[in-house]
Image 1 (spheres, rainbow, N blue to C red):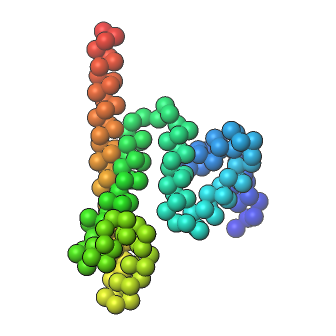
Image 2 (cartoon, rainbow, N blue to C red):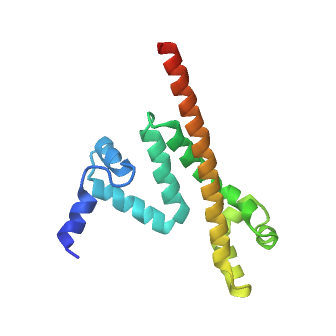
Image 3 (cartoon, rainbow, N blue to C red):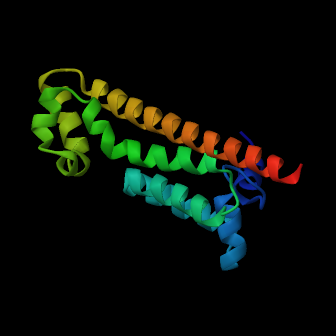
Length: 157
């Protein structure tokens, strides 16, 4: 792979994924590559925190974004702790509640994988929870946007 193309991809000022790093770079007078690397390092060190921070900055920076996108992202964020309810009884007992589930997620997956052999099932159940809540949030936002557009059109005519 060409090193120059990789460098150009990470240093370009326009949108790569939701445009968060570009907008933060403009507001802070930093290079987009610095912010992108910071999010990558943050995500690698504290796996859910970097992703949550990225989505949070998207919501903050895009106040005019449609409600469908905003509610879908909020639903995905809420899906992380609520995915606890999609887990088996054994995992719920190991976690001891939603807080324990979030704090000890990696340990629980490791223990279940070591002793039972299906640690990936826990990860898939968590992803299902995130996707379900994201779809619910997106649907709520879609209907809020569509009802706003219908009311706006009725008032104009």
